Image (cartoon, rainbow, N blue to C red; front, side, top):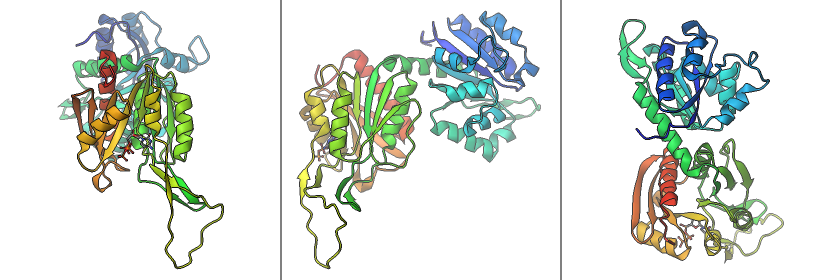
Length: 404
Ligand code: CTP
């Protein structure tokens, strides 16, 4: 295992289940690897194991209540100081509360306020784990950026075999180390991400647009913020919720995107342009609705600015990543855009039959330099955002780019 845990700050939430005793061994393993661990227990956890166990292992105070800490708002401080939050074991009850946003004790309040990677390791009876309510709650946590360390099959407290045992210590330590490694590449960096469609109106009721939803940009922004970056998301018209902890600037037309992007991208460490920008806009815009006359209507289109190309011209030391939406000769066309727009890397997206637009899944290949190429595979957009930022982080650290 890497050295990622050394010197790291870990917020460990312990819930009330029989596996709470395993949290003590986990705490000891973390401390031995050089981590600083702040343990927060639920009231139910205290029925299974005492705070003294954890405070002896961590040599730090253990928190159990919002009310008995020496300060007024320990939940905010604890998650601000931590690099990563882990709940192990997580009970069905606490998982349900996190999915619903209920904050009725120190642990759930702190996790709701956390803007750091959150890892949940469930442990419970197999029937509880299998119940559709628990499954739906875990799926909700997954879509909100929580990482889940699935429980294992084994001997349960009910003296029967089933899936519900807390994941083995190594798997939990691995998940923590991965979250910490990812965080290190973007921590403290300034990141600008563009996403969503543009709308180019030709009268007050109609516009030229495309099927982009901004889902990729939203997933990238959430993931970059979890890695400790200061993120600005320039987001076109979409019904999707923008992520927490991110500065969101809305645009509608390509011209608005251009102004926002040029102002915000200057001096940024990383810019990722995933917006599906219309290459044209109606040359004329009527102030009143155009009424049908039974005749054909010709709408003349003028070219829009190429926002990414303009960013490329003045990129300075910013690491600039574009997207290429292609229907044929994908990589050849993408490499041409990589060079022409002075990009450091480009993610190629297959948009035949509107694939990639508005769907939950996507397939990406990342290209850089003359020959650099990495397949990121086909996956949900959240998972692809993780892979894309991992790859970009590595390129930034190694200094690789089309322009180096
Ligand atoms: N882009 C942009 N401004 C435009 C068009 C595209 O900033 N007017 C950006 C997109 O955000 C994307 C990249 O350029 O990161 C490539 O977009 P794409 O639509 O694939 O290519 P185009 O440059 O529009 O070229 P073509 O129409 O020939 O495919």
